[in-house]
Length: 419
Image 1 (cartoon, rainbow, N blue to C red):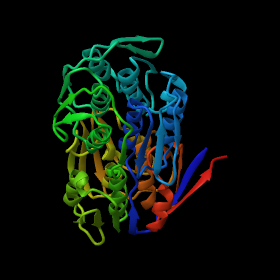
Image 2 (image 1 turned 90 degrees about the vertical axis):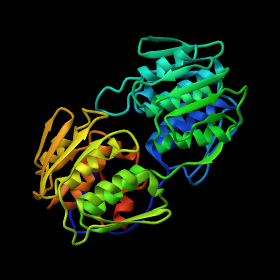
Image 3 (image 1 turned 120 degrees about the horizontal axis):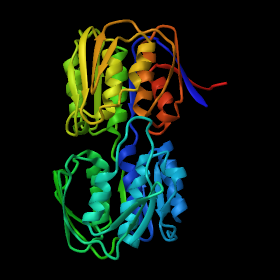
Image 4 (image 1 turned 60 degrees about the vertical axis):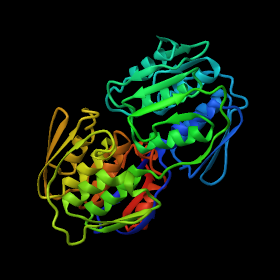
């Protein structure tokens, strides 16, 4: 099993290009199932999660191929309307195929999802949305079975904002008869990217970027064509690496608007942040950093997917910082591993209190999920002596060429196979 070995070596300095967004490309891939033919996605990252989704589409009967950062999905042979447990258990986003299969073929059987090692994240909102569209939904033996002669438009209000449910119900509604209104829809950039891709397929959607999406169903969609947006979480992670190392890091090929909440927090901590049309530079050299209190909330607020990385940064900032995660209150499995490196953190419910400023010391640690993996790497960049991080397959799910990009910035990191 692959692992990382790191040693602290001072400030990072340099620039990296940011890849396409994992959380955007996966629903785009699922959207291809809504039409017969070859759909194209450009700026596609090479990630473990993309391989899982590709394997799932192949099980359904699609051909998945392409060149460098180009992905082609040919749905001509899609006829196996089942997503097996063996694949869905490894990645929650596999559940995205349910809406498109139900809408186009009138039935689907998809395993209940897995993916991250932390916390239950139920799919109730997805299923209630499908039922509102007229589908019959039965959960049996760990599988969701859905059937519908024809989906019909409905007025759907989500009690909480959910990216997954918004994307899944949105895709299903594009082929429903009549008009569907989704209230309290998620407004994350990845939802906008999914809307844009569906529009390229001929879907009729109004309200892009707002909490209310209105979808007028069409008889048939055409294959899609579009580019994946930049990965705002990858960009935030590399900027955090610059901050924790007290260095200077520039991320290119990004949309700075997607990063506004993260950049605001970095400025509050004391970093100098410069922004261009498609780049952001963070400079923490000789900066006087200070503790902060933040809440992870839905977009456009501070993202839960940056919570772990920010915690690593704050362990090195003098003073008492507080992080509350209002989205996933049990997403703190990285706390115990940071403590192994010498961090002083108190955890109570959905809130972590960080007593920052202590020096971190290298130790063997374990990655528990995707973003926790990145948090461990950031801590290892500044810890004295050597840090070894096991189970980095979690990190490979969502970061493309991660160690190479860190090496490009001057980080001392190497991948090795654990004995």
